[in-house]
Image 1 (cartoon, rainbow, N blue to C red):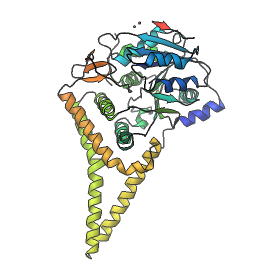
Image 2: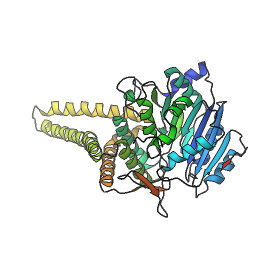
Image 3: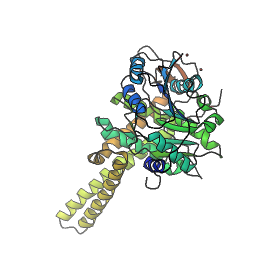
Image 4: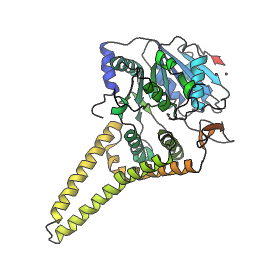
Length: 405
């Protein structure tokens, strides 16, 4: 966390030497009425002068299309692509992005392609800062880890623990390294050079991936001539990932399943590690402290050293958690709740492993997926999906366009 810079460095670089280049942001949206107004409002406030935005409305059955038209209000920078079906073999979000790229005018001559989620909110200057940092680091792909909201109980108690486990599996130093790289990206924000995106085959190359971000990052890393980087947005990009505990559970189980390459054993080991490090050790340490206090009260010499070790260990543990909370911009008082968050994170990992073992279908973006078979099928009536970033590599294999301006 200390070594890898944040997007605030890009903000300083952009102020000193403003970046240039045509950017097209392609944003898939499936039933995003809850968040789409805030997203459109934030991109309309973006100050980058060479920006076009393509909204790929994917089989929407709610008020998303009406809210998009009202929010755009004739802004000529915005273009809408409406999608009424998703072909077999494609993940819904991946196909929506592909349609946005291939069927829009804004993407045709773009020098940079930005893929973002509809539940994000951009601060003015985010795009310029990202381009400047991309230029400084000579990157073909720049991805941001958004600053998450902490309004609901599960965001305050569980979210940081879930994100920390993902960071443990995909450390930022390795994601940004030149050697021994481990591919990682966050689908909430991925900025590609057009040349690199076309060279790896675009979204068509990962059409069946439920976490297309990791799949695309792997294609970039596999090409030794290309570089990728992942950075904390540090407040310049914000996101509320899930509105309910049910969506939170479903979304994070999908993330962990794909991050583990759909390997049950890997998820089970991760669950045990999270429970041991996040729950067993802190509670065991607390027990040692209580035992030391009891020994000291009864006059045993071993009591005070044991009590001192407990105090030092607890302060180090809390200090680390407070630092993590600060990076995540979570309330400081949530740090001691990590024990509960780690317990629930481990349970999610165990549940994801059990679901995969039993081939329980996952529902996302209006479709149902049998992860055991790796194939997508139309969602059952009434099935709901949720939009979240998104690793399984695939090989290469597009409906009306409206411009409200």
